[in-house]
Image: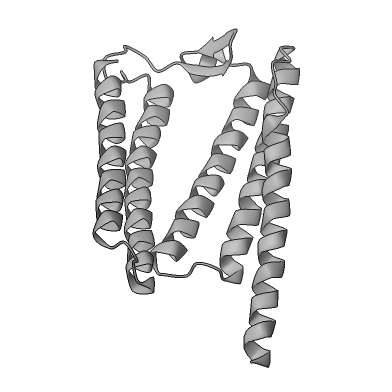
Length: 195
């Protein structure tokens, strides 16, 4: 538990440091050039990708510790919380249907992680408003909707309907925003061709 708290504090400190660097650079350049803005976006995207890799390693260890029964930092066993009244310390404790839905949810989370990582990879390369960006953002909306559906199935199987519809609406909103971004991108391309 102590290492987890240290990890959280270090993550916040790193995020604050990156924010401070961005503010300091902005103060130096009151009217930053286009290249400086792009450089800031690329630097921030690099930091986000680095934090994602670190979190992926920690989550991977957590899953391995759950499956193998290893200790997790100061805890003797990893506890997986499916809902507030269903907490499991090993895969054998889980009902089969919940276990398989949970595995599907983990696989789906890896897909969501890959989408976000790829999106920030595009930003890091300076690709800000391409069709790939729109596809990745739209995929995030679909990710939230499908993840909500998997959670709904798990809560139904547990007869513990403690489910929020917020991810469903946010997913639909993200899909709508990605559609607007795609239409705006197409309009901009048409204007560049006519000029």
